Amino acid sequence: MDTIETLKVLSPSFVSVTYGAGGSTRARTVEIAKRIKRDVGIEVLAHITCVGHSVDELRGVFREVESAGIENVLALRGDPPGGQLPFVPSEGGFRYASDLVALLREESGFSLGAAVYPEVHPEALSAEADLDNALRKVRAGAEFLITQLFFDNDAYFRFVDRARAAGIEVPIVPGIMPIASFAQAARMTQKCAATIPPRLQAALEASSEDPDSVAALGVAYAALQCTDLLERGVPGIHFITLNRSPATRAVVSALIAGGLLEGGA
Image (tube, rainbow, N blue to C red):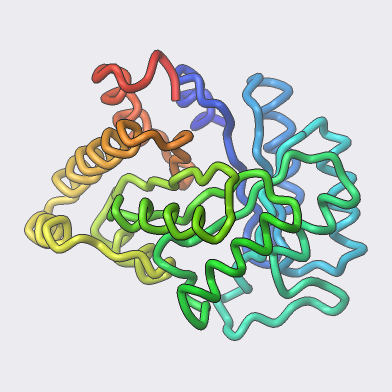
């Protein structure tokens, strides 16, 4: 909640609240989302995942979220506990996020979003199969898509072009994570199959022994990324804060100062 208070001054359109591997933070997700909307007055995008739940249990989650007055949901398959692969659905549960989207669309009135990977999901058999999966989510009822993090804007725009050619017409919001540390960058890119452009990689390696320099580089690079994205007409930017506000505040403040945002994100 302290993080939310520091971000509130930037007037975000919404705050997304993650769910946790295996549904481990379900109760906290709902409670935090409820408090953000009720006490802070910011729209919430609550994540719901397939992991750790049967269909009947998921219906319980829907009712819980709806009763809290939350109107927006990001429907995800979710990461298996401990990163165990291949993914094994819970008994009576879903294997694919598209199935969760379909159930939510049929049985709720949420505004629904889903996730996509501009550089291909690490478990996908091919880029084509990954794009087909995104199309299934949209046909099942997803009204917008949010991308996993990336550091190469051309990868995002290539994905958008391919998605449009495949018939996906919903907004595709880029996900941006300002790099906070050298270890974090290595961990997140490996997990998400995101590539780091050679010049950024070289700069990170040169600053790897100086945490403050890495953090400053992360803010500067994210600001350049966002400037380019906004100038090229993206529908918005979803900042991946990992519950830390300084880097996102610095990037958004730079965008406001540069006239790319009018007093808010």
